[in-house]
Image (cartoon, rainbow over the protein chains, first blue to last red):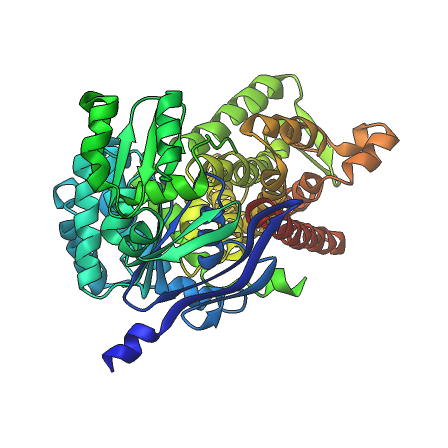
Length: 310
Length: 262
């Protein structure tokens, strides 16, 4: 029974495409989100993450391909789907005309959550997100971290079968980020299914069971955070802060996998750790760093280091 | 066509409730303008101008200038409050506060949101019209019987002006652009729809032009009712207001879908 649950697709996208004029924002992507998993959509700006999320949320209609959420077509059953999912948008769209608790109460009413159960549910969520003492505050009095937490609380009002988070911690201080992570982690343990986009690789590594990296509207890779690091980078990375020709000649001679930025060389591979003493001796210990490989290495390797101006 | 209309549901009521909750929270402030506005008009036009223009002949009756303009001022209040709610106020909710976006992540569809906003605009018109009527009745300018009939008409005409406003909200790029419809529609209607003088005193071409303005029908119906008359043509004028409301509601839904859902 448990395996059945885990196999069930909460989101299923097949050949999903969204075209705006001549621009293919999402270009023929396939992915699925399984029940009770946290699935990440990663990618640089303009990769198509938000467009994908907006299609899953029934805000945008796909140009072609099929998209099912909770086993229903997003174009035919938008109302049903929206009743059963929770959405945390990128931008703050809390209602500034209403106090904190009224934001939740009025939002609950859109879901037909009315009457005596409403206050109980709202208070539960205010406690859960650590906002109970702010329940009578005006929205403009909240810090950006509190606003985020209130948006998360709001998205949980209807006990969603799928929680969609679009860059939930962008622009927050470390304390607020960790507070949100802890809440999301707790939700995961309670069996929530989560679809998340993020720019933060540590966030993705911490929260996601599985993820895809998108670029230019396409999915370029899919896997678990650990699996991707292992496959594309290896266990460790050596950084040399130099752009010297000698370094490059050495790396080429040793037949090493490396990347060159305007200030650094990055050396990847399964067996680079033994080379560490030799490299530090050659190029100086102070300009070399040996560290664990992380998801950011995978991301930059696959999507490149150039700035994205979209 | 069906796709737009089939998505309107009773859930529009939730949007109305949201706006009403906000209104209730600040009702003391909200009540002041609709009460002061008619008093200012009555004072300026009725007493100031009324001393120059003593009596007016209309539909075979000779009445004081104050009695002449009272129904017109009710109509103006209905137009202003309906139109301004779905232009400036709705635009702020849609564009600056992203309230529509937030509501769209619930079971409500865009059509529910827009229709709810239009009904709310009509409700604001109804409230402003009613306040104006109460003052006119107390002042002895309109009989309470006639005023009672005018209350539901305020809502109908409110739908006309609020749905018209929503069409502009669907197409303007920024909030300053509302100056155009205000300058091109609202101000001319205020001046040339028979609020301050009978349309028959205009040159013939202007009389025809005035016949294209929704406020003209509303003023005509309300003034006759205030005089205790109701002709068949007034039924047609009300029907025409309803038709404009239907067309503008449909048009605003189509335009808003284009604007928000692309």
